[in-house]
Image (tube, rainbow, N blue to C red; front, side, top):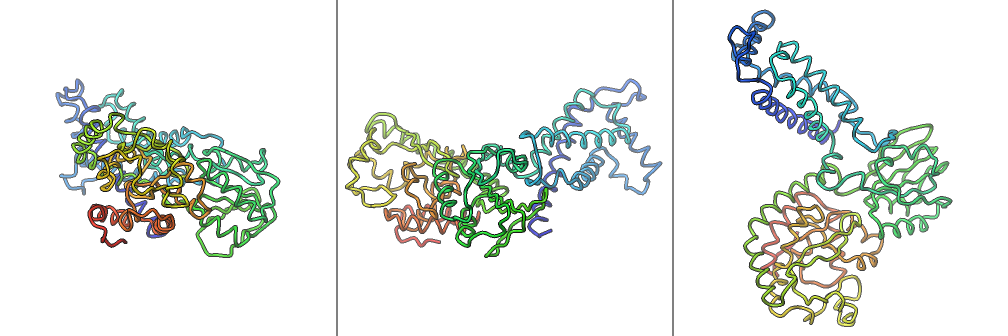
Length: 487
């Protein structure tokens, strides 16, 4: 196992150990054990009887244990540790194989497996140490249901990602030359996702045709997974291979022979029903990376909203004084994997500004995707400073909390702008759009599309949480200085 995988499992194990131990101790002391005296315990309270039982067991069976460790809290900690060792030794908990068969989209089977293991282990623990008859049966039943939910929550990044706004059941896939009655459609990787289109009778050797079909759909829907059934073919054309690798999507190739590639990259290969399943996932912000980025966004976004709330209130009053309402507008923008969302913004233009865009096309400073006009006549007089210092974008902090946007990422554009993207630039949709980014700390006032393109692709190809933190740190300086050096 790689060091990164060991570290990931180690952190998750430690988190579960600490969380479960403290929760069980709290639940035991506040709900399971009554503070009243036990009728059959020689005048002892329930808690005193439990401790007395532990002392008796210590003197009989493990007298070598130091006296200071003889209390129920310590025993619970040891039990949790042993239970997690048992849980981690089971393949169903530590490993989710998306290339296995699954007929159900729900997590019920996974929850039930964890429930059985947890309940049997905990009941055995309570029975061995003579605690079972000294605790509340009603609260014990509740506990047996609660803990498996917590364990399922930490089972893998998929479940946690769904709670943070990126559910696998909301992801979509398309397939090439995969029959509707194919048994491979019961693979977990497809069962949990939505089949948007099945394209059959396609010559996969025709790279241009395949790429055009993908690009056409990629501009219309939230596309996450591409299935290619190569049947007897065992290699991709160099052009198609590079395209799929750089697409930053999940790719599954089904073939009768092992696939041979022109380039070196990470992929999985499994044999199932006499076929080779070759899978690679170049999704940039997925799994634990997405979770960490969302956690950073939620923390920083919440702090920023509290810090800037007085300014936002003043700006609402100021804009209303200049031009009435609404003071905050919603614009339809394109987000992660092409999902459209409503982006919030302080209104600095006239109410019909977007409708006037077509009439002002000849004044556009850029002849490609970006629409910018020098001395734009649609801007409300007295609001230029809001745009100069990006104060009009403060409401987008609420988009960050909702999960539509991130603190850092390429700026979200209109749907009509997205339709003009080429194959390579479509990759910008594979990361969360952001309030600030490489462009904003380097050449934030530029209207040159090539410059936008350069910084967006650079960000995508070099994305990391460390890069996000550097951009966040440099953003305030970029607002007040045109000489700030980029990253």
